[in-house]
Structures are given as C-alpha cells and as structure tokens.
Image (cartoon, rainbow, N blue to C red; front, side):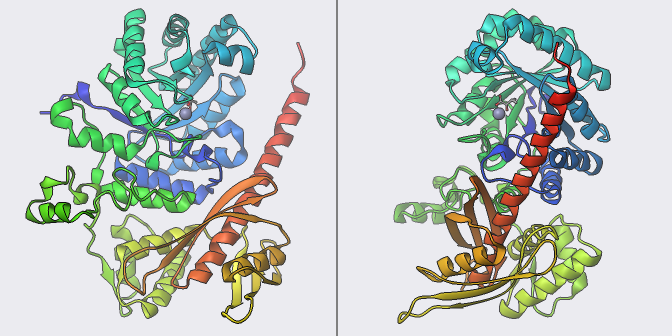
Length: 526
Ligand code: KIV
Ligand code: ZN
C-alpha cells in the first residue's frame, strides 16, 4: 500500500518557465493542446503562464483554466497588486485555481535588481499573499533565488507568507547554483527554523545550469519536500528546468528503494515529449535520458546480445512504460473519415468539423504516398495543422532547381497574413539557402537562419520528414517546425512559421511596452 504522505506532486511549468526559453513562442491553441496532454499525463499542477506579462499570455492561461480539467491551474504573479489581479482573473474559471506569487530574497537580487531593502521585501510578501488569499485559498509563495538567500532571512519571509495563509512554499534554485547536499541542508534548516512548514506543501524548483537540476530536486524530496516543479524535456530559462520525465521515471523506477511516488501516467511520457518538442521547436538531444531517441537503443554487440537474452541485462526501464512502441494504430489509403476520427480520438485529439476535414485531406495526401500511416504520423500531422494560423504566412507554392552543373534557383509564392500573395526568387549556396532567401524576398524580411534540423517521423524511405528551424529576425530568435513527405516543403513551412512567430513576438513585446508605459504614466509618483 502506498503512503499518501510519500506522494510527490508534479507541478509542471513547461508553459511558463519552459516557454521563457529563447525562440519559443506558443500560440493559444498550442498551449491548450500541451495543457490537455499534461492533464492526460496526470500532472497535479499546470503553471499555465504569467498572465500580467501580455494579453496573449493572459488569454492562453484563461483558456486553459476554462477548458482543462483535472490538474490545478496556476498563474504566476510578482508581488504587485496588478500582477495578482491578472493572475486571478486568468485562472478563476478553473475548478482548481492557484495563484503563485514570488519575490527575490537573496541580497544580490534585493540590492541590485529590486533596489530595495529586506524590510520592504517582507512588507511586499505580507501584502501580496494577503491579497491573493482574498481570491483563493490555494496560494503558493516562492522566495526567488532561494538557494543563494541568507537562510535566516528567507525563513523570516517564509514565516510571513505562512502567517498570511500560503499553503505551498517553493524554494527555487533560480540560477542553478546549488548542489544536492547543500539544497537538502537548506530544507532541513528551514524545517527547523519554520516548524509551520511541516503543515504545508514544500516544493523544489531547480534550474540546470550545472546539470544538477534533477539531482538537486531529488535531494529536496529526500529532505521532505513533496512538490517538484519541472518541465517536459527539461526546457526553461538558460540551461532549462529539471526535466519532468527524468524525475517521474526516477521515482517510478526506484520506488522500492526511495519510497516516493507520483500520480503520473508514465505511458503518456513519450507522447508528451514529442508534442512539446514539435510545438516549441526544441529538438530533444538523441542521448537525453528517458526521451532521447537512443535512450532505449543498444549499439554495442555485447549489449545487444545481452538484451536479446534478457532485456534487463542492460535496461533498467521497459520502453513500453513510457509509451514507446505501444500504439497499434495503422491506417492506409482506404481508411475513411470515421477511422481517422477514431484513431485521433485514441491519441487524445478531439478533432471535429472543419479541422477534421482538413486533417482528413492531409491524411489522404500522405496515405497516397505512404502505405502505412501510423500513430506517429498522425501526431505529426495534427501538430503541424495546429501551427497553421490565419495570422501567419503560408507557403502557397514553390519551385527549386538544383543540379551539379549550375547554382540553385528557388521561386516561391507566399500567402500573406493580411491577404494577397508575395512572390520571390533567389539563387543561393544550396537549394535550401536559395529557398529561404526567396522566402525572405517574398515576405520582405531579412531573417537569418541559425539552425536547421531534418528528421524522419518514422523509419522507412517514405517516412514523413520533419524540419525544425531557428532563425533571427530583427534581433529576435524564433523557431518553427514543418512536416511533409517532401522535405523542401517541410523546410519552407518551418521557415515561414518561424518568421511568423518572430513577428508575433515583436508585436506582443511592442504592445506590452505601450501598456507598461501607459501604466507608468497613470501611476502617481509618491
Ligand atoms: O526560477 C525561479 O526562481 C522561478 C520562480 C518564479 C519560481 O521560476
Ligand atoms: Zn524558474
């Protein structure tokens, strides 16, 4: 029998800390899809965003709060009243809303960043938690840069948060500086200095700057913490956050030694990882623990021989536990709309009406070229369609000429967001270079390619190709992903999506700038 006291709550921050990674820009539809998948994965809390930062973020958090059932839906807020009001307005329609408020407690942050005093920080925490508490009982407080804070001062601040009613206290290693034994000792000291911590949930939140995010999180759990903040594929600020799949599988695989467990459905891990990777444009490194494509591959002959005789000679986990190789869906060119809808439903996608018609059209195009359309193909098509937006550029047609005797030439026609078509033609160093330069000419922007990755969705010569690009436009990094049986078409789509994402981000930043200027002008100076 599992002991409830040893259950570790999974607080997923893919859509908040994860989305803060450079180049990631998820639209509302994409965030909703990820949130639905996180609910299927069985996370306990979804930190859906930082609502005060932009109307786009606010709208996405609100949509998730309204639609996604199961997990607590949380909005992040600094201690300012308008942050807390925005967080509450965004999450209030959830069945289980949470406000997460934070302020830095390290001297370096207080003096240099906030340019204030410890006393002021204490006052802000008191006011913020009390204000949030008027809206909901579920208030979480984080002393930012906790691992570099003076522990006595941090304890005082945490006591204030508890006095005002916070029911979760999260101590972040914001800059990924701590080490497992140090982080564990910090919690032991905090439990000693603030006995009230034994009556609430204490949480870990670790960044991966020194590659210790998972180890540090685990050390915190061993000190008594029962919530872990993490992100799918370990995405997040700088080197990222602790990886959700590593933590879940660590506790799952070593449960008999560690005694801690989570409510996550491990069989949804692989699918969640693929979805997040596709929609964020952050590819997963091949040797990444749990979800890298080599995580269950055996190269050395001795290993292969051992695994064939007994899988457990070299495998500590079974690939099916994380949902690899479990899906039997196979459709062919004679499969109809009904079969497609059923298959999509089985994969967790509820696709109806115009979206189903579009998915069916894409499916037929692919089934004409590929004998077997598998679950992996369907996932790729649906994620690809999800990225299609009327406010974005779209590839209408292209021609690329390449030969060994003369330089490549590309011609493109691009549908513009406001209507109309842009045309461009260009030569280049290679066909892809010429294609991207022609797109720049068609849309009138000088985007610069930074990274270009091609991969196959499944094995086989007729596999769908998936292209991920990272580009820079006017100083802003943005990524895009495109899927097609034609690798050039996938390249064009991914490039146009990245340009559209960069422009959307610039527009959002501009709107945010105007908003905060208007706010400053309205606020009377004391
Ligand atoms: O890393 C950090 O300190 C954070 C807080 C906002 C919790 O992300
Ligand atoms: Zn963080």
